[in-house]
Image (cartoon, rainbow, N blue to C red; front, side, top):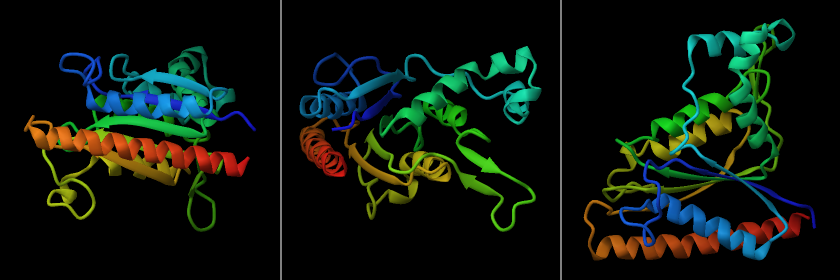
Length: 229
């Protein structure tokens, strides 16, 4: 059975996990559960962990943009150095078969730390192509096919799922799936905990439901990978 690579990204500013640590993160709780269940079923698979919540990538700057849009053979030492971090993040994404992202909702969108990661991996010539003279669409995705994206979220309010009362205000999943689809990662699934700000039995029920959904999703994707191999 071929080895699968998981890229596990946590983006919460909270360092711990809810249910384990005081004021811990719900998204860290869900990503840990998913990866732990996956490893129990497929212990030989490789997991790469990236905690952008505690160690955020550098934000894109003018120097970064200039370096990224300069062909590699024309970059000077400073430009090459400016992209070292981005190169490492892209390499992790390219190796991954499954991308598991813990993405809490901050003011209706993704945390700035996670947005910085996205900006670093959406790279011309590496994850998407661009040619002004290309007939039709000048942009095209470059990620290999077959990758899957799992988004595990948490929200203070409730009703952000598709069709919910606040669906139109949920920019988290869109903020991840749109740029990931742009570079070629089009298959995504998402699960979220809600009612965090209420801190009552509705939160407890939401956590329990999300954990059950995480277990089912992990089992489903493990099964898919087993059949594919």
